Every structure is written in C-alpha cells, then in structure tokens.
Length: 253
Image 1 (cartoon, rainbow, N blue to C red):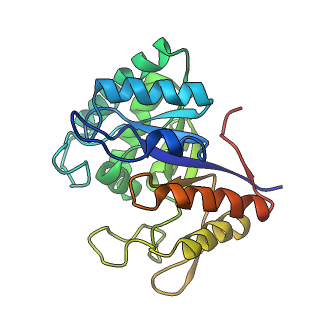
Image 2: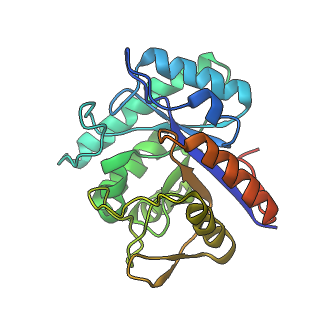
C-alpha cells in the first residue's frame, strides 16, 4: 500500500503581521516546516507553532532560509559555503530550543525558498547544508526536491532523505520547479493539483510544462499554507488520497 507524508510551511507570521492558517492546517498535514526567524517568523511565533505541533503529534522540522525578511527568503543570495553552514546551524539551534521546552523532538530539516532552489542544482551549496545538518544531529531527515543535488548531498553525508514533490507547482523537463517569476509557476485549479499529486505518488511521474513526463520520487508532498484556499485544498487532498488507497502519515511514527 502506498503512503505519503504531507508537509506544510508554518510559523511565518512576524511581529504584528499574521500569515497563514497555522492552527487549522495542522488538522490535515502530518509534518510541518517551521520558519526560524531569518526569512520569516519570530521567537513568539516559533514557540506558539512548536507548541501547537507537539500538541497535535505532528512531525516537526526546521525551515531555515536566507537572512532576508523583506524578500521572504525568495531572492537569491551569494554566500560562501561556510556562511551557508553557519546560517543553517544557527537556525536549527534556535528552533530546537523551543522544541525541547515543549517536550517534542525535531524530525527533519527543509531549506526554504531561494536557498532550497539554489541548493537543488548547486552541489557545493547542497553539501554545505547537508554537512551542517549532519554535524548538528545525524538522525535528522533532510527534505529536498526529488532528484535534486540536495537529496544527493544528504545521502553522501549519511543522512536519511525524503524526496519532496509539490502539489501546486509546475515542473520543468529537468525535474526542477518552474520559477515563481513565471506566470505559469502555480497550478490554480485544485483538482488539477490533486491529480498531479496522486499521479506522482502512485505512478512516480509528473507532467512538465514541456508536455513530457519525468520520473519522480514522492516521499513527502508540500502543501502551501498561505494561499486563500489553502485549508480547503488540504481537506480535499487528504480525502482524495484516502480514496485512492494512499495512507497519509508522518515519516517517523
């Protein structure tokens, strides 16, 4: 029987600004990636999000990103491998403080935004991220784009990896995600997005923007929690996956 983890980026509110439907999304996902204060989030938000995830028994992951609040971590930055290592280590330590106090444990790490996309195709960046995670805690799972350099680097570093696919993003024929700068980066139709997920999980394939199929490994599916229909889509995909005979559960029981 097929199984899949559903993950969502949470804890992205900051100061007086509230983003996403964090508490409600926790009823439908099995893992969460919590912002660590660099691209989004703040100490209060981190604490509250961790506490909610622990209460619900959700797999908790760190979501480290570039130090770019204004750009929400989606703008490329040119950093050295040492700088990347340091910013990953810093953010993991910050989040785990809240996790320990709440009585939980960190399950995984998923880089955010531009850091994630750049490391998907840049071996040196990917290796710096993987090394930081391994040095911090070699039992952590590294989430990375299916077929990417990030997954390769994680395996080379001795980490367990989880190949990630995206419900509402379109793909290029090299297996990368369509750039958010492109008008066709996002799938707007919920049923189309659900169909894409079910095919990726059951068939290991995804249709690209070039109208070709590429092979894909699906261990975890990313659902974005900040869209206007995020909650209704999360409900829909849980229902459709169950009807397709797919078991939805977190990676570590």
